Length: 348
Image 1 (tube, rainbow, N blue to C red):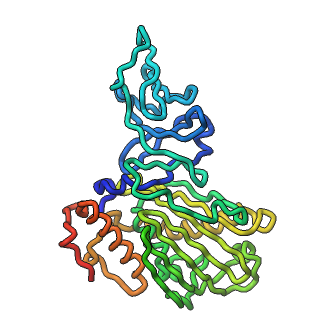
Image 2 (cartoon, rainbow, N blue to C red):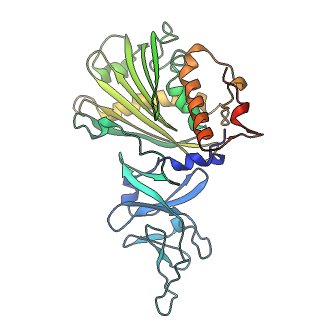
Image 3 (tube, helix red, strand yellow):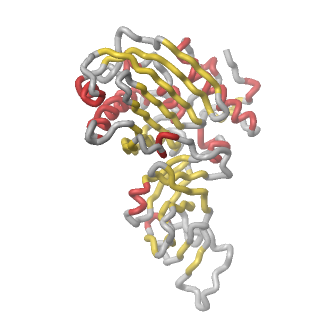
C-alpha cells in the first residue's frame, strides 16, 4: 500500500511541527503525504498551514517571513493570511487584490505541543489522550525525526510482542519470554485495543527510572492503535508507576514517516529526570529503527503476500481495518506494481 496514493489518508489529522519551533517566529516547511506545506503562527498565536507555493510564480513561501500574522513571499512580497488569501500586494497601485490570488489552506490546530494538520475534510478528531490533560501526569517530548519506513510497519511493530526477545536485547527483551503470557484484542470504532502481559528484563538505567532493583519483572500493557498511524502504549508497573508512550508516524511520503513521540508519567522530575526517561526510550527506539528501516515500505494489505504467526494477530487486524476503510471510501489498494480491488485481497 502506498499512502500518498490513497486519498482517504488526507482526511486524518497528523502532528507535523512542534509548537516551540513555530514560536521562534520563522516559517516552517513540512512535507505531508507528498504535499509541501508551510506553517507559521497567525496574529492570534494559532498555527496556520498552507501550500508551500506562492500562487504568483511558485516560490516557496517557507523561504519568506512572518509579518503581523501573515506569511510573506520572499520573491515579490505578497502576503497571505491563515486562510490562504492574499491580503497585501506591494505592486498594487490602488490596493485592489483579485480574490483569485490565494493558495490552498488546510485545517490546522494545536494539540499536545504540536501543530496538527488535516489536508482534507476530517473523518475523525485528533486522537484523544486522556492523560495529556490529567494533572497527575507530566508530558515529556521525546523524539521528532524522520524514519525511512512506512508508518504501518511501526504501528504493527508496537503491538508485536514477539519481537522484544530478538530486537530489544540491550533494553528490556527477555530470552525467557519470546511471546506474551497474555494477549487480548478488542476492535473499536477508531482502531483496536490490546491488553497483554509480557515478561521483561530491566537493565540498570531502567531500574533507576522505575525505582526497582529486581532484574526481571512483568509489564502489564494497555495498547491502543488509533487509525491510521497513532499508538498509545500504557505500561503499568508493579510499583504503581505508569509510563505512557504516544507515537504518531506522520506520513511524509510513501517511503518516509516523521516519528513524533512523547510520553506521560505519573511521577515528577524529582523522582526521575526527563533526560533519563528519554535516554532509555531512545535506546529502545534505536533498536526498532535499525530493523524497521530494513523493511519494505510497500506494506501489502493482501495477507497472502507475507507469512504470519499467532502473535501477528494485532497487525493482521490493523491491515483488515485499513482495508475496510479503503472499501468504505471506494478506493482500491495502490501498490508499487498493481492496484488491487478489495475483492482480490486474501484474508487467510
